[in-house]
Length: 174
Image (cartoon, rainbow, N blue to C red):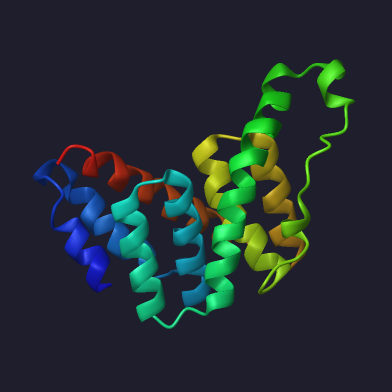
C-alpha cells in the first residue's frame, strides 16, 4: 500500500482516524484481495478524486490484482454513475407514473463481466452506497447474497466506500 500510505501522509492531523481506517479496510476482512481492491477502485472512480483513484489503482496493481478485476471495477463505477441517479430518483419520487415506465437504459456491462457476476455486483455496492441509492443497494445486496456472499461482505464493501469518501473529503482540505 505504498501509494495509499504516501497519500495518507498528506492528510491533516484532524483526519488521523481516516489514515488508520483506510489501512484497516484495505487489509481485507471478509473480502479477498481482489474483492477488496476491486471494491476500493470502484468507489474511488465513483468519488472522482484523481489523487485517490491513482493511489488505489497503483496499489491494486502492486497487490497483483488482475486486469479483469480492474475492468469490472471501472465498469461498475461507470454503470452505477447512471443507475444510482436514475433509481434513486424513482425511489425518492415513489410515483406509479415513474415506477411503471421501463428504464430504457442500456446496462449490458452488468451482464458482460470480466470476472464474475458476484464480483461485479459487489463492486457496484460501493457506488450505490456513495450515491445513497436504496433501490441499488437492495438489488446488489440480494445479487451478491444469491451468489453465496454474506452480509459481512456487503458491510465491508460499504465500509471501504465510506472511508474512501472521508479520505477524499480530507484531501480537499490540504
